[in-house]
Length: 116
Image: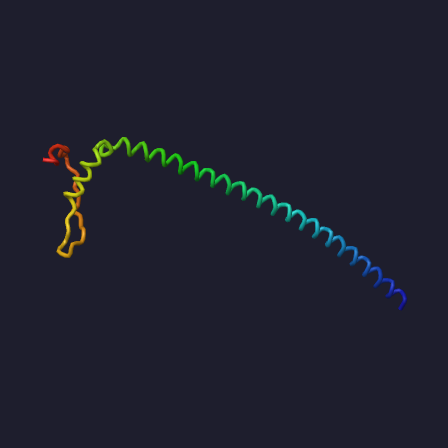
């Protein structure tokens, strides 16, 4: 009976040693994974900051483009009073007094011809 007891203790010692090694390896791997998670979260935060910066830059550039494009449009040079008159002529009311508008068709008619 005594040799079996020694065998059991030896087996228990080997098993415990393996568990410790597995636990140490598992702990090392968990530490590695935590480091990778932190690195990935940091990279993601940096990417999101860069995305927001680029989005703001794009908005600024588009705003500048739109302002310049609007100023280059021929309608921009027409005085507000004339534009107002044009839109008033296009607007009409129904029988109940609700404001409606006619469709505007662009043609090759000059502004002077339209105002006559």
